[in-house]
Image (cartoon, rainbow, N blue to C red; front, side, top):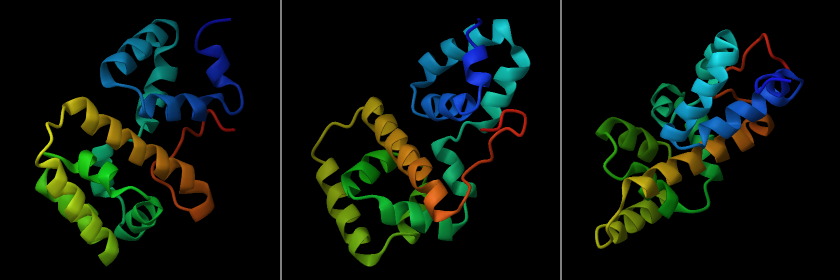
Length: 152
């Protein structure tokens, strides 16, 4: 059995995609390269289904509002948006409830006194992606479609 075989079984593809969405980019690249030697077409399918934080820009505001409503910790969002583009920061802020906007402002101001490293930002972005994927089925929205070839 090859390393891609278990991910081709029902449920395996989706689990792999979710796992890779929250894996550091350098480690993700190594995993995908190892899999690519075995089945390059499968890896292309996987790569096309991975949701990246910047793709929230393409998501409808109503869906992003669902995601932000599910966030309980604005500090996580503050880390995720630290030094992010104005475009994505504005989009997230636009989708927050007024109380959340205030909490985000406070959390962002507190970050000013801390030294934020890129790893903290990436970790926070992964947490938001993970939360979005977690609520996706219950809220009946789609962040990014999964492969039609590897259905659950």
